[in-house]
Length: 311
Image 1 (cartoon, rainbow, N blue to C red):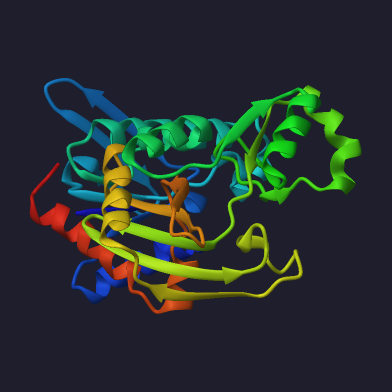
Image 2 (cartoon, rainbow, N blue to C red; image 1 turned 180 degrees about the vertical axis):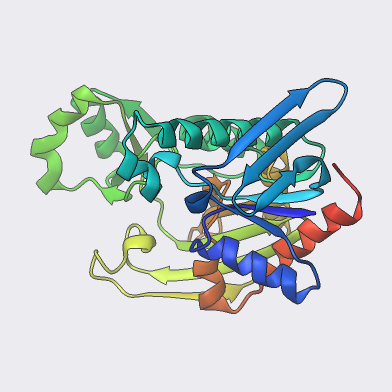
């Protein structure tokens, strides 16, 4: 059995579900929004026995051969928010999340992706070191609470940006003269600053052994928010050098990711910088723009795990 765990309205989950059906498979879907009243049991011994009971029936996770996980923060589920953080509904949702995460770490089934594989993304500096070891260029970086260190760093590179250190999404923003009066705010929070690397952005989705590259054209510092920054954006399917594709695959594999989204930039002189490897990419944004069938590739990977009889 192939198991999907997340929220139905989440586009990657819905697309992979439909792709599996088109390929003749009917996965079991556990919707977080409707499973806040579910119960689960786990027994770890000679065998891993995990059973989830929902209004739709009982799911014995020993029958799962492959699973695609895109859970949301249980605290943001509508039923949990209505009931409150100290409610039984909240406790049940958190316990179910913990149990399924533990099962995902222990199961022999193919998991896209194991929760522990998110760990490198939770520390951008740590991930950057991994990427440099693989052979990618990474931006010169400082993490500091000292405004003077930032000013010296900016003098050296002329143009710099700042962004989140953790896996929490932030808008990559250039540090301009207009923002310097606010620089003292960093004394309350370590902040990451990087040299601004010129060039063309690429998003590479790694799905097992398959590579899907997209080229992004935008004048915005952070193309994801090009509209807010008054810039247009176009995305098209692209080819990248074989060596860069190999490094993307190696990065994904070393981080324990069966599916990943790799953010790259190619400079005018042909250097390839890697900014991040996303362990749970919202690939449909790029699929819709390029026509690449990434959902079909994820479905094939799940089916291949099922065919191997893992679990």
